[in-house]
Image (cartoon, rainbow, N blue to C red; front, side, top):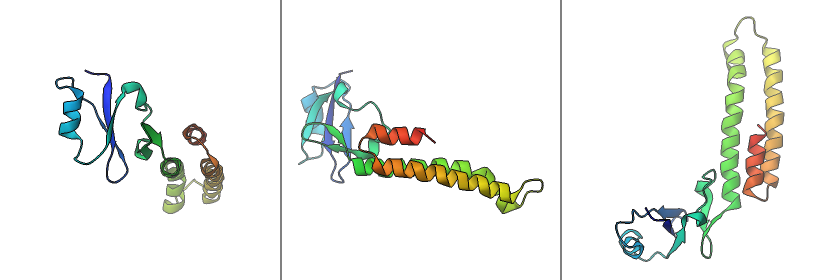
Length: 141
């Protein structure tokens, strides 16, 4: 296998990565697999981000893959919402099912603490200037 990749921007703005098998010269692979009319770059594996956390926010820069910070924040907020829902779940069931022996008041207090925690995470994601800051905010959950 080769240590090179072919990258190009799809018509929707997302980034495609072609991993050649090495059976054909990379230029032939590009000619065969990159849609007609789209510009591409041949890069090394080191130039393709290894962290796929924000894969949906990859965009083509002048020569390489970059992260669209706005899209990274959207992905971060989606992940935050999933984490928050997971934490809410046991308390939602107590309140919804009115399970005997469990206090709805205590459950609602726990839910409020979760809301406050995730409001801080939301603020941190909104203020983030790098993908690492978004990841750090999510890890605080």
